[in-house]
Length: 117
Image (cartoon, rainbow, N blue to C red; front, side, top):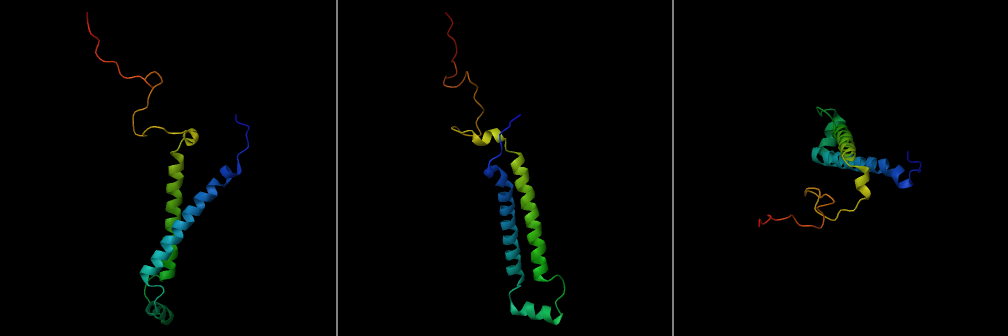
């Protein structure tokens, strides 16, 4: 077992993911509020008079923002599961999509056809 204590950076990593998801949720909420006309006087007067049918723009913005927060958090969590922790510290000096090289093939070219005598 590894007896090393986690660093402060390792401990705060989930907080960074929550911050990214929160930023995406707030962005989606603001876009929803702007597109539904939450800041226009026509919509605000209709809400105040009680003649506005359906979900208010603020409630719709909160629903969309919460959905975007949860979806972003789930996507980031799934992407974090796909990363091997050993690959994070390893340097990559070749294209990623190439076939992996074995130790005996590294630095040598493939042998050509052998000439018969």
